[in-house]
Length: 138
Image (cartoon, rainbow, N blue to C red; front, side, top):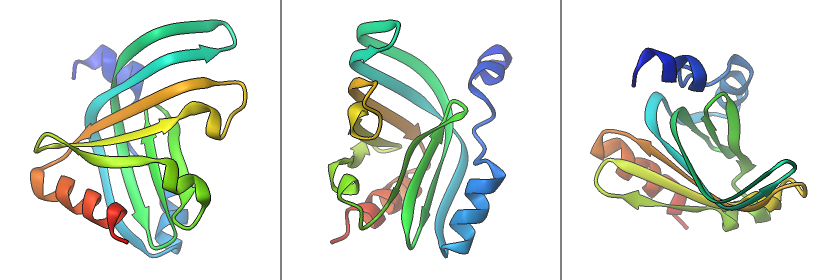
């Protein structure tokens, strides 16, 4: 990713307070400086409307025994406990061999937003399979 995009999207590091929380909750997996993309579909937000909006992303995935955090482009995209009902509505799957795809409805946690989001982050294949395995285990 070029320098300008990295300045705009951030370095893809988990912020210190989120890292500390995940560590305190028994950190299971953490990967940072991941490249990928965010796609918004049927986006409706104050001042914004778009059928499809795609942007490059840098981010991090953190999984603890208590929850999941996906941080990308300087913002929490997902922050939910495993046992929360909203967690069941977040899709997690492999998208190719190297990418983990998180899908979710924007309005689930913020009533000002409508539409859906897809966050794709690229990992080495064994780590991508591990993330999906952890999050889809029953």
